[in-house]
Amino acid sequence: MKSTPELNFHTRRWVKPEDLNPNQTLFGGSLLKWIDEEAVIYAIIQLENPHVVTKLISEINFISAPRQGDIIELGIVATKFGVTSLTMRCEVRNKLTQQKVLTIDRMVFVNLDEHGVPQPHGKTEVTYVKDRLKKKGEE
Ligand SMILES: CC(C)(COP(=O)(O)OP(=O)(O)OC[C@H]1O[C@@H](n2cnc3c(N)ncnc32)[C@H](O)[C@@H]1OP(=O)(O)O)[C@@H](O)C(=O)NCCC(=O)NCCS
Image (tube, helix red, strand yellow):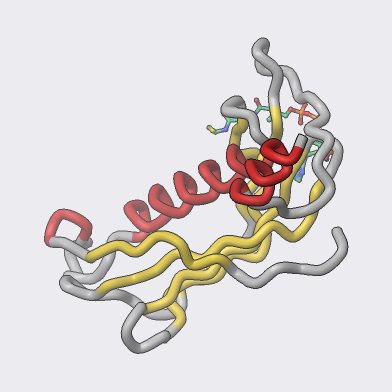
C-alpha cells in the first residue's frame, strides 16, 4: 500500500430501544453485528468479490456506552492487503460529540472462490468505485 487512507465514516446508526441491554445502553452484540456487516461490505467493494468471510476480529475495546437516541458512526479503513486476506481497522464514535465508543485494531477478511476456498484477490491498495468507473470509461 502506498499510504494509509483515513478512516471512512460512512454509516451512521440511531440507537433505538431494541438495541439496548438491560443497563439501558447499547448492547455490544448489536454493535458488533453492525461493524461486521459494515466491514464485510467494505471488503466486498475493495476486493470486488461477494464471497468474502470474516476470519479474525482482534481485541475489542468498548470505550464508552451509547444511550438511546444517540447517533453513532462506524469508521473502517484497510490497513493491509495480503494475498487472499484484507485487514482493516475499525473505530466507532458518537456523531455529535465525536467521543470514541469502540476501537478494533485488526479485522481480517478472506477472499474465497465459489467453492469457499481462499483465493488471491490481486489487490494491493484502496481503490474507489468512481475511479474504477472513470478508468473503464477511458478504455
Ligand atoms: C476463512 C477460511 C476459509 C480460511 O481458511 P484457512 O485454512 O485459514 O486459509 P489460509 O491458511 O489459506 O489463510 C487464508 C488467509 O487468512 C489469513 N489467516 C489465517 N488465519 C489467520 C489468523 N488466525 N489471523 C489472521 N490471519 C489469518 C492467512 O494469513 C491468509 O492470508 P494471506 O493469503 O493474505 O496471507 C476458514 O478459516 C473458514 O472458512 N473460516 C470460517 C469463516 C466464517 O464462517 N466466518 C464467519 C461468517 S462470515
